[in-house]
Length: 266
Figure 1 (tube, rainbow, N blue to C red):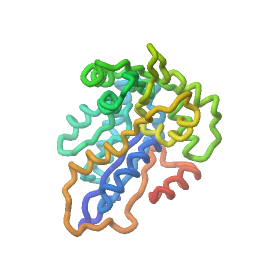
Figure 2: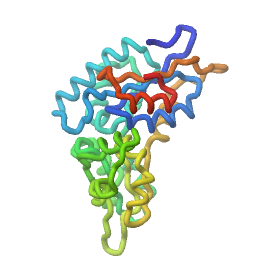
Figure 3: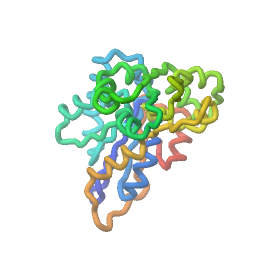
Figure 4: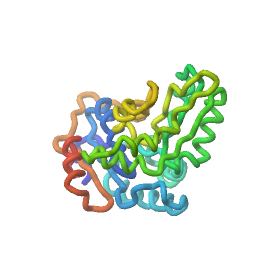
């Protein structure tokens, strides 16, 4: 489905699963005149276990089809693991398209921290990426940055978002390495470097051994996308347009219900 010819081109939001809904939520507030297409690569989820070259080829192949089918104005890559791996390749492969990426919010964390102790909670793929290390080198040399790669938290967040029970013990086992005490100081900021994680932020706050600022980049990503979109006077949101695409072709009932809750047809 493409936007009607008399309407503005839509915004495409891409994620490995349903975590990018955190970004979609913010983008809609700032771009109410635009239609949205949410694409979840659930057939490839989770991305953490993929070999890098194979994952690059998969994502570039997917976008070859998505851009042809939907002709968006802008693509938001609402996935740290994907963008830190393949962002440059996407821009090279599709130079006519504007891509807005998601990277760990290390720069704002370094600017805000008072203790100098910052943790980055991410997938193992994002943690091992040179892109992430370069961000630390460029913006956080004065900080002690702990990278915490969680094998299971993205899956757990998907279950949690759908309404499944997730045990406190299991969540705490994934986040406890974020909390550092050093020379009388404590971690005061945890960067949520996976778009799935903000859905669990209230749970994280309850389980944390002391209060920290859980840094969610979704609003900043949406603001960046807004700056790249032309403002059209008197534009209105196309009726009944927003929809979701799942690469498996078969989202389950809980997922379809969740999409409907976000105003998306599955």
